[in-house]
Length: 118
Length: 114
Image (cartoon, rainbow over the protein chains, first blue to last red):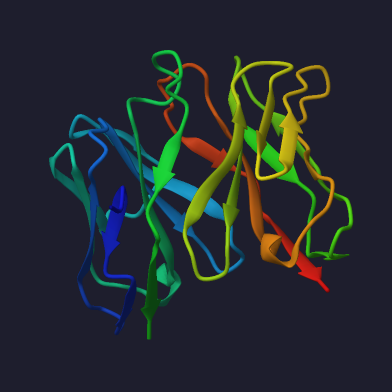
């Protein structure tokens, strides 16, 4: 049973298109995240949501719009895709905001979505 | 702001060699520290963690000790296997809760050969 699942695993699309990546967690967690991993493997936070509320928006272009219909889902919609958007996008979740509550320190990651813009 | 610095790779070792991957951090407050591993073609998995100073995290033969005095969390393994070949990421989370994000190092690729 996959704890954090993202779809699709691979996505190849042309510049200018609009695409979405879906993420679901079955851990009962309150907090979800999107991270971007670039071609050099560097990982950077994009967004975090807690109880469907946006907590962090790390200077991401407004072409990227996360949507959290409920606590178990955090989808990422990208408008007008650009070549520089090519990367691996990871969804993650944690029980609550990291650091809040004893023992709540761990984030669980999905398998990643490799986005290639051509 | 918070930051994590880890040694650049790739690190190439023969099987059964001793592994050290250095990691140092800069953070306000009292962060938790992590090592994540990414095997080829897979997502991130938590390898081990430590939540306070002098804690030692361990898993699958890997160990790391949270050293507040040197702001370090070096990863070690006494005898590596070919199956340990992966990219290893050191990370921290802000202890205050409001930031609620993991800050990652740049990753260190480990290649273990027979």
